[in-house]
Amino acid sequence: PEEGSSNFIHTFVTEDIAENGQFAGQRVHTRFPPEPNGYLHIGHAKAICVDFGTAEKFGGLCNLRMDDTNPTKEDTEYVDAIKEDIQWLGFTWDDRFHYASDYFDTMYELAVKLIQKGLAYVCELTPEQMHDNRGDLSHPAISPYRDRPMEESLDLFARMKAGEFEDGRMTLRAKIDLTSGNFNLRDPVIYRINHMKHHRTGEKWCIYPMYDFAHPIEDAMEKITHSLCTLEFEAHRPLYDWVIDNIDLPAKPRQIEFARLGINNTVMSKRKLRKLVEGGYVSGWDDPRMPTLCGLRRRGFTPASIRNFCERIGVSKVNSTVDYGFLEHCLREDLNENARRTMAVLHPVKLVLTNYPEEQTEEFEVENNPERPEDGTRSVTFSRELWIESGDFLEEPVKGYRRLFPGNEVRLKTAYIVRCTGCDKNEDGTIKTVYAEYDPQTRGGNTPDGRKVRGTIHWVDANNCAEAEVRLYGSLFTVPEPEQEEDFLTVLNPNSLEVLYGCKVEPSMKEADAKTAFQFMREGYFCFDKDSAPEHLIFNRSVSLKDGFKP
Ligand code: ATP
Ligand code: MG
Ligand code: MG
Image (cartoon, rainbow, N blue to C red):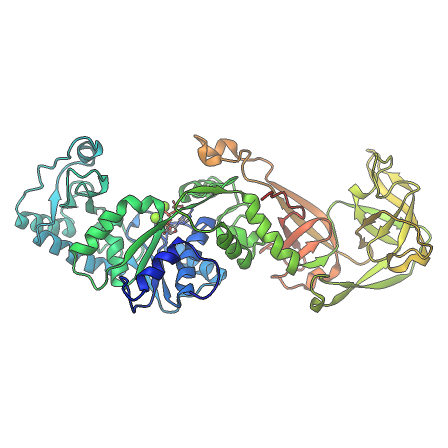
């Protein structure tokens, strides 16, 4: 290992590839095995970083494998989306792309061999009976079919495959230990009947291997050295090893478990995310409020910020919940350094400079990013009529208010100092126009006489600007732990999306590259929504400017 931080997985791997280790002289080989039954979320990003990252760290390889052994909810749509998301994060698998379903024939043959070795049998207990017989660990489980002749099991298994029996009628079970204290070793089911069309193999199969049987075979077929998975599989490891030890396979991978990522203020199970999508509570899997990678991408999260987040939360053996604010903190750090600064007025009110010549226009050169001079400058026009934030004017100021109110001076960012002279109101009492006089001596925002001007506000030239729709996002939920709720839909936040129309932005936004990240000065970090077009600009607020996260 050359660089980056280390964790307990790296320690195990280092031992394993050492001279006397289990994988001495071998190249580290991991895999990321998503089930194509939904879109990847931030939890998967952690697994991706662990799987691809561990391989990277040891100069090894990582496979991408679609774990498609359960046809029920799998679909090709998800396969493409999963690939896109992993590539977006910046990981590559070259030609190391596999489908677990490619091993269906092999798995079937291996199951037959297990029966021939006396290590598997066809069982006719109903799922309910089996549950009753296996569930209570204080009693040994029973199956009256355990000792049926091998020939009978071979015949029944072939007929299961041929489609002779309905779903649930019988199963193939590994013969391990009905008295084991580990539930998973009590003759686990390794094949079940499921008459269902598979997204790749179609109607070819009506029996499908169970995860615990299939996964070690998939790993071994691909000569994986380290099969990294989440903690809930820890108690399955003896079964993983049993399969590896009792079946003749091309490799003997090692399973290592690490803690799942949990984040507050959101839900991550695919089942719940699907409910949000199918119930129309969000606009789709890529709704910017979703914790999916496509949602985070649309929200303006950068691959670097997500990888950095995964690196910093670390890898552990204990499940814990990370504050959503920390994810935002990582994004804010990235955008603070890299986002282009621009001025945008989200709640516009007109400011008229009564002493500025009607037909006059001037230009200011503004830095695109003070943190990165190499990003250059752009020119911003200025004229007699400007847009300012309605919140930057108060007819009657509250204590400590330093922005525009009659008689007060403020700096218009990079332009001039102006003194407010009054306002006009609409019939409903809202402010229609704010009036001010500019001080021609203060071009660039400096006062030649050295007088202090405390407030600085941003603005957009009303005679030269573009309109935009701006979407502001809040948490999808009203409680920090929606996963704990009996019905998580009852704690949905009805105000998680606020849409602002008629916002005013610099005209150069019409030509900006769709991938650019922006800091709207004083407002937050924004990106173009995927539906934005030059004639209808749409921005998403990625994250606010203020960091609410307390480490
Ligand atoms: P879900 O319960 O959300 O459907 P899953 O584990 O069934 O998730 P898979 O597609 O099987 O989803 O996951 C692929 C890989 O990603 C697995 O190795 C899994 O352990 C890992 N993974 C899924 N969720 C998380 C998480 N929250 N934190 C870390 N790893 C995760
Ligand atoms: Mg899974
Ligand atoms: Mg799942």
